[in-house]
Image (cartoon, rainbow, N blue to C red; front, side):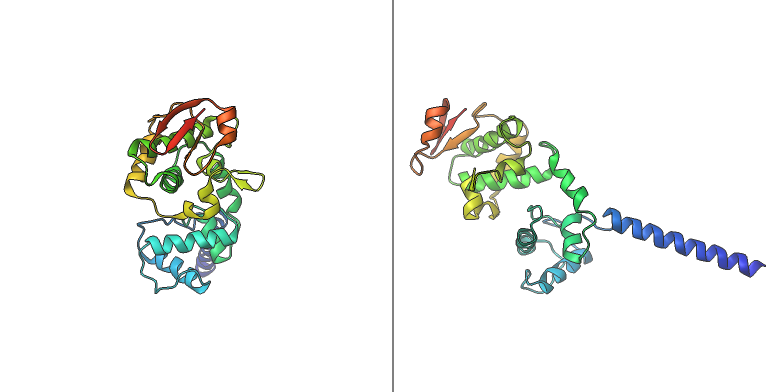
Length: 236
């Protein structure tokens, strides 16, 4: 009688453990978000999986540095999932062969300016558009992007604003030429943070261009001039 109860309890515990594990995998909780600076065995696993698929071309190190970030971005581009260089649940589930968490992950993109992902993309567009501009000009580019996020005339997330297309033409040329994926300088990262913290050197401007590189005819005809900083002119 005692042995039967013991076997029943052990069997019940095993079933509960298996069910919990299955639920965690389904819910995406079995994945830890990995990003630049992460270290450990999970990073090694990620790097090996990327290497197996042809995206990571050196031996796994266990450190999530620029090579790993670039490999993740390339994998995300090819997989047509959110491109942010961060190995979150959606990226890992796609890489490892599970896709049950993608819906929940996509749902996170509808929020307004709020996360470290905004610094990630904002610093990259600032670097791509204004790496050679004065610091105030860098913050101004971030100011424009955030004004678009807040405007009803544009998408409502930093990522969506940067990757918005008009027909087949991207709103920002770095999206077309690929420089949006370059690693930003420290000054550009700080400029992104300052603009997110409320610095507004160009007020309500939602457009800018460099007159030495583009005519900006539509902007000049349809928008109001605000100011010039370095090589960029700003309009609202």
